[in-house]
Length: 483
Image (tube, rainbow, N blue to C red; front, top):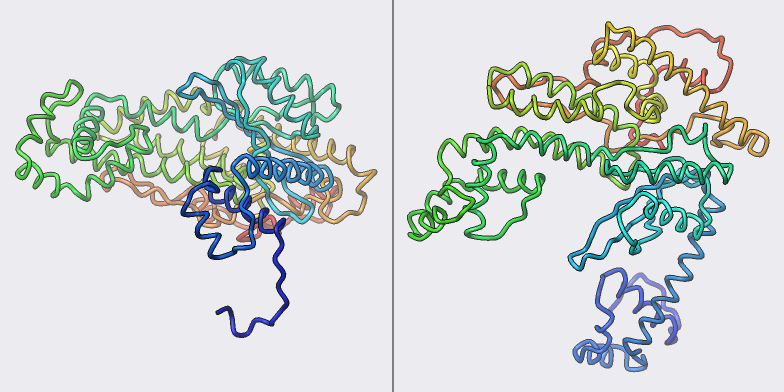
């Protein structure tokens, strides 16, 4: 029986609608196409809907391909009509069959200020070389009719540098580069964090402790070995330490087998468990950071520089620790950190602009962080001016491009900067409170900014909507896309 309050309507069986619903189920629930030929499934449909002519696997494959074609056309039309700029992320990898693949994802905001994420290509490529990657991205963009690309986020492989250089030239030819493609190349923060953390885990004691605990877990159940998986393994294992101790008494082969393993030195010692506790608190920040910046349902561009600052301040704090091993981990991580983020001019300035265009932060917060991290240097003062000048330059570029066609349109890039990117998940900073001994930062940089900053009365002599925005007081919003 259905809902008693639902109105009674005449129902008529529709073969086409039912086949489309079947296609939808197979795609959404990721069922294999051969499900339509399973005896149990066919019997169920025969009982539930005897009028439905169940298609064969070959037929349902054609149906799903037709759905793909129609949805692709619909998305192409939507992107063309409702999108000003598209940000691209790309990733490449090699399968166990030695086939090279590339995945291309488009991120954009529509006319109603809704954030979208769509995978627009997943295809094999000949090899992981600059030209092949660049040509693959170019072909995909042409197929989709996407020519207004704002940025491309890639990992730090050297081949990606060449691919971005190739694409910048193509974008220039298309006449759609913003400021000559100055901000197109965006380095993936999650990938850099991974490199930083991996260097921190290369210490001898840390490696041995992790190895023995992982060996004990593998004896019972196989586990992966990525650093974020290492964090989850250690966090769970610590809570089950007493169970591991008891298991040694139950399974007599447990200790002997681990001693015979070539890469393990027996069962975890008490010292290993103590180091594991330190590592868990050490890794927790980076694990949570990766989750925050990897979100797909909210804007993350305004979070990246704040997270970079938190990592910098955390590493500085650990470098001052009297814990020799913690200090050594921080030193290795700082070396890797400095390679990518150690200099203020190495960071893509779009990340600075994203902070300014967050109405909770604006220019004051950015200048506060500059002073906090790089204060007292001539470079810091020069960079402040470059950021301010660069933001006005970007604003004027957009104004020249769109003001003549979108004059007066609410929320258009050329007419107003009041609609900005932000994250509903970032309204409260994540405080760094790890080890109880010497490695605790009580306040986030946002909290320090709130404590130290006093509202300054601003003048009314603004010259543009950008300057008007910058002169207004910061405002708190849970979702700044609706600001």
